[in-house]
Image (cartoon, rainbow, N blue to C red; front, side):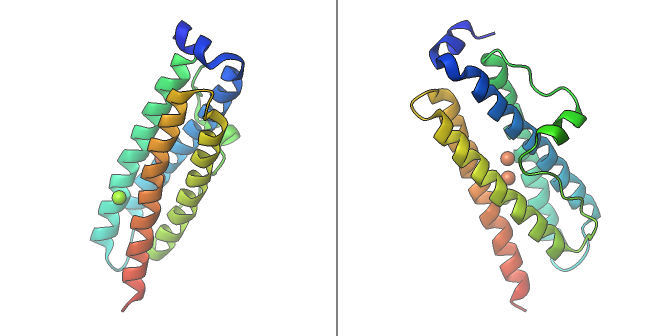
Length: 161
Ligand code: FE
Ligand code: FE
Ligand code: MG
């Protein structure tokens, strides 16, 4: 428990932990959506798309690690069950029922756009209140922006022939 860390954040600490846990749920679901999408993907440019999906899966897992560490520093408990991810997610989970690479890219672009909004809001809620979480939100948001652009570029390349 980060006693001083919690004291610095002050009265908003519980509210911030709730937001962190909701983002944490999103990251696990995004991780799995990418991970399983990479396994089932079919269609044109599959190699390039699978490489990108696998890389993003690893990065979403890294985000989950970053968020857990902050939740614990603030005296919170990270969500302990997969059922909890479903209850608390902002962005939900889209099963890759259509394994075509285009459908996968579209689903994951939607997920990234939701994630960008989540971190935009988290940065707004923590600016001037909790600088460490604020920095974390900006750092993760920069990754999500990169993810969106990576996937949109792949989709664009695919549409060009
Ligand atoms: Fe992420
Ligand atoms: Fe992402
Ligand atoms: Mg990438």
